[in-house]
Length: 338
Image (cartoon, rainbow, N blue to C red; front, side, top):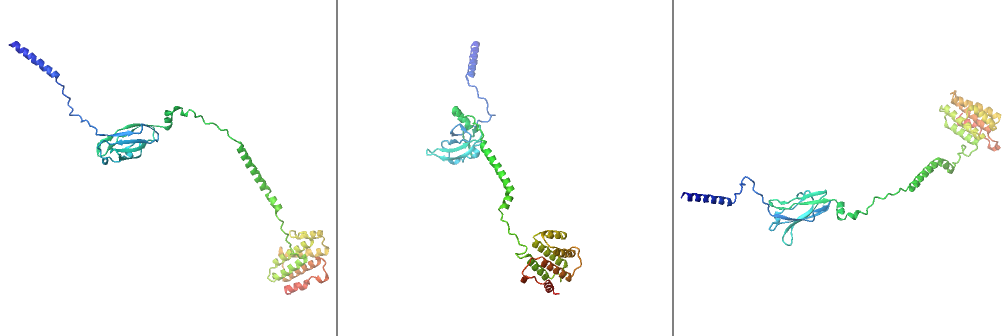
């Protein structure tokens, strides 16, 4: 009886162990961990290429899952495609009733960039897939497609400088400079040769010197300077008339000579001695009044004019008898009212 009970207990223990071993182990308690976030429906995204050249447009198509309301999908803008540059794009419903976003983006940097996932605002469960895009330079693309396409390129060919035109230009400039210097040097001489000589002014107005002198003396007396007290002015003008007359009569220049030089000049020009006896005292007297301020009055002025008339009468060429000069006494007395 006792042996039977022991065997029953042993068999019961073995059965219990087998049952426990055969039973599935209990799952660990995950109550303290965050529940797994399940993603919602994924938008089907299609890219025109996974490698593009720098600045090349990339075609992107995002296809909404079946049953998606187009009105719940706002427009995708530049901020949604960063770091890519947005070119264009819009949502549209195709003929098959599927809502798709068709757009074009580009990249202006080299490297590998991730096209971001787009989630619809207000319905974060709907999102598009991310995609890595490789951007390379155009020259690299050409090398990848056809490495032998640039095999025919050569180093830049050198071009020998042509100095001949520069030498000709420099020679022309030098020739122009020499010509300008010569023209500047000889211009005045050439202009003097080509310039017409002006007509010589006749100091006696085409009159014989003695007639010119008579006219000037008459005009001097008509000024009334002696009566107005301008004695110096009267004697200065009278000296000028006498010098100009004697210079024209004997064809010599006397205006720039001193009184002491006039006598020898007249003598060398052929003037006779009686004339010299009149010229010296007259010019000396006129100089005393002009320069030494010798006292003189109206009577002295009349006497000086009379002496000048006698000087002209004594030196003028011989004239016919009917062409005699006016009386010096009568002429002077009539003009000065003596």
